[in-house]
Image (cartoon, rainbow, N blue to C red; front, top):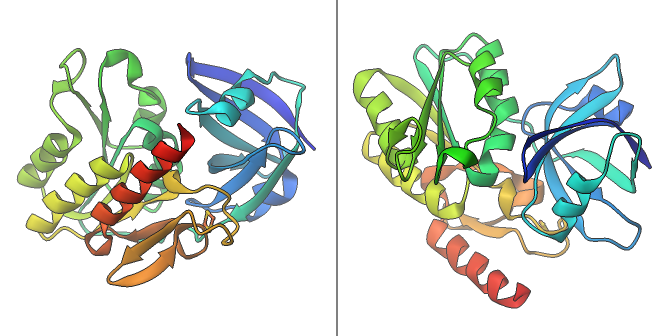
Length: 265
Ligand code: FES
């Protein structure tokens, strides 16, 4: 059982939970995730560790309510307990210092897991430009947090209600056209990552896609996170969550995700 030390809402559907987990706090690196269960027989959901405090023995999770379990989780309050938190899991993000800009772009459920990656690249001395995308102004999350840990934040909204009007790819392309970009990191819906990947391929910008949004049990057993990378079968939960975006078969991934949606219905 892990106690919730504090909780703060970013919006109706997104909350930040600080949770007691001293061992995970000590071991975690950017890119790692945990598997959380709200009750004993409940569903397990993977969540990226946004940050940790080794002295306090806590980890911070940013939870976006997208299903039953994530909703249950953000309905918990300070002082409540989470059934279990297992981790850190996955492979840590490969962080290095580049000569030129690192662009980190995210949308939807991808914004929270992007946070620790932005922070780690920035701490390593990189110039980091963040491109955040949302359908409309109210759905833009973690903007202030991103501003604190990056050099620039560009907001893109589909309807132009905030920041620039357009898709995430437009924001990324603008950056590529004005300065030299050495690396792009993308996290978000599969379709978004597919188009970011296509764009950066055109400009020969190495790109990492973090696919942790498509996991189910995270144990390497269920096969739900199976993807094809460079023609080889990989499991996101054990081989990832990060992969060379230009090698990922996004079309296959999208097809599989759609068939899950059918099943869920
Ligand atoms: S999430 Fe089940 S095998 Fe990876």
